[in-house]
Length: 329
Image (cartoon, rainbow, N blue to C red; front, side, top):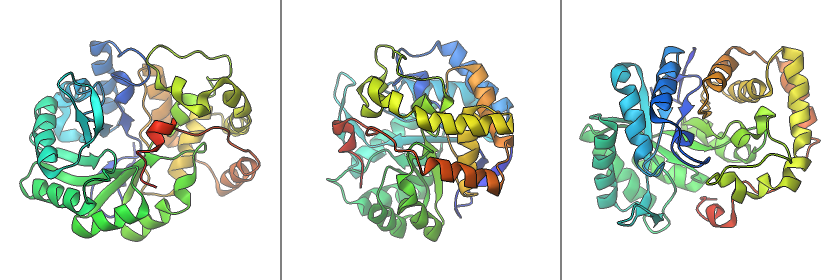
């Protein structure tokens, strides 16, 4: 697979990464551990070098899974994880926490769970309104100087936060949702990243599965699947949003590809420093996603998608009201 540099950071990764969250949490029961390890290792063999996890996934168990799976390939891969959520003694998530002393503690815990000496890319998972971003960036800067972290990232941060953090410690990458289904980053985020030389790592590049064309108003979600709480995934909105799937499917037929491959190819065509991280628990979906890196959309193709998409209204918010409050906008 082709490589891409995340902005001007010097951090080079595969054009597509692998989001590992769904292997442990978020989309129903966790996957079988040995099957998930085999899936992650298959991704390495297919050229994927960027693997994304976080302390909150599981919680904690996803880091352990990723660390175990990638141990034989440590010198070939980039491991990204995240800090910033608070937990009680029962391992339940309790708000945000990016206090410097807590970041240092979480770093040691993540290094231990991952079984590594250095975190390649360390994101603040959500902006903590109670801690100045300069303190966060300064703490990560210290961790970089200590050799415990290589690169600093932000997730779901707004433009002013990005600028303030970048002035203290260069930000290598921003992670945020971006796809044909959610294009808000085009307004301010992407121009700012381009100006500052920061890479962009879109999560949910397949719209949490919707852009695969496999979800419609009759789809039911497993217990523990957070999509059941997302307004955009109500049966009514899933039906209304099929118009977007129809236009993607038209392009897929033209290019002899799948809707998911068109959605990923569209993202890759936006900027050379964008690296989507689709997640999956299925081997055939991994292969399908990896093959998207070979799908070439011409300027005419992109123009057709743009024209068609401009006529489609997307229905429903992308987060529940509670989750939306943690987005720095």
